Length: 610
Ligand code: GDP
Image 1 (spheres, protein in one colour):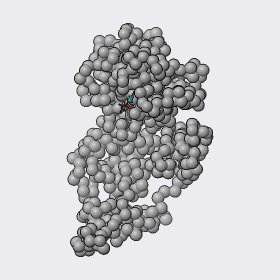
Image 2 (cartoon, rainbow, N blue to C red):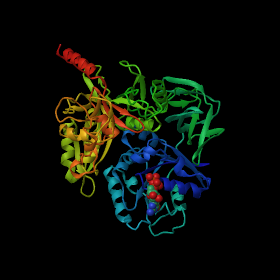
Image 3 (cartoon, rainbow, N blue to C red):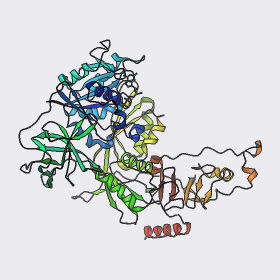
Image 4 (cartoon, rainbow, N blue to C red):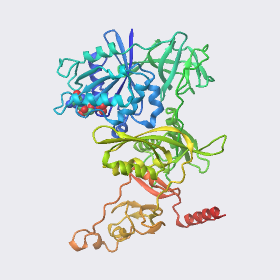
């Protein structure tokens, strides 16, 4: 059987799900009652909300006598190393672009990687049925984009196909026959090569891992050489050639339509999944026991950020979520780490009922917290900290540095450069990137980027786009100024009352409103001065004063500052925590009791003076 392994690169909403749905239904590999969106390339709610794709999934379909494996690509640079490994499984890429919107900066990162490894993309101009479509301009924009990304002559000479995924047709010209998807299928088969296979016994580079409740550890990759059957003995070689594991394959799974099905045997070139091994992981080579050389693999990006996940031990614990015990949290975190190479979970050395979770960035850890929250967990989480290292030769302190690419309207370049410089970023490049926009490249310490995303969006009225990629460990960039303000704290437990809040508003902006449940040690607002201040917000004078009926009695509150998870994590200081439940995000002092807190802070001061 002929085979094509391809990736689809698309900005969210440009029609990838619709396109794959039509390809499946017209190829006949699709059962009527299956809906693509259900399992889907973007099935995860969170992925959809945040406009990113996190996991690579494979869809496989038959066209005439060719099988086409379609791999989805992660859309965000927190997962940089992953992108490269995934693209190394394929021989071609389809860049899907909305005929009205044109190419978007978010897809640049993946596209750049694809061009760099030599793929020659097909450009698919979708949504030609839109009344505001402007395909000529969009094609020019794609050309400029390719040129900007240093595409070679062959890559610049990309084939273009036009159509409407929604209406179920693709054609060689914008006004071509609107019949079906056959022209795209044919182009894929004609333009892309069948996978390069090598001579020799079974070898496969592991690209993704997944913890499956029935199969255990499932490893996905492309078979580089040889064949593989269930029950076959194999070994796993690490990147350095050492043996990571020896064992037996229990199942060989191939992709069919949207499903993964057991097969007797898989051949070189195919993208498959195997189960049976227990410790082998991404970037390992699974191979016949006679093989001694691993397949070259990109190193796995190191974890650069760590957070302490603790149980919720506040007075409101267990009121909004049903998963609160330390054991349940631990099991959930370990399960996550099992399926995610970029995550490391260890019990905390300083505290009981707490775990250190190290990952590849705020986005990844934020998504994990958000997912757990939706599953019913309650947690408290500390401020993210970067993972420092020491240079073995010089003894110098090293910290993770990222390449940060910001695409922004010209009028906002000033504020972006200023804010990032304050965060110790160094500008490396600035050049125009399309109409009225600039692309600025920085090297920035990860430490300085914590919480910057939301600031960037508000500084640029939501128009800037930031991509981040781990660059290197480099010598410490120096102190970065943190929050200057203290916290307004509740001094008692109860429901906040409008009248009380009203009278305290001049102390600083509030995070709570009338009716918010508060407790002693909870942060209810930001003190305009540097110290913390305890306040009573549950005592309303007389009830008549609170009723907002009569004109002169009406209490008009300034709307509270809403803390998103991301904002909250970046906001809290060393001695503070974010309390996360399915319904609320609260900020609190790590030590709730005021006397205990004072004692500990005095001890700390004494220690730092000594
Ligand atoms: P994805 O986020 O890239 O997977 O995009 P979807 O396939 O979910 O499509 C996003 C939106 O665009 C949906 O509302 C689709 O119905 C719509 N859409 C997809 N293809 C077309 C098309 O060819 N023409 C028009 N007008 N809309 C389309």
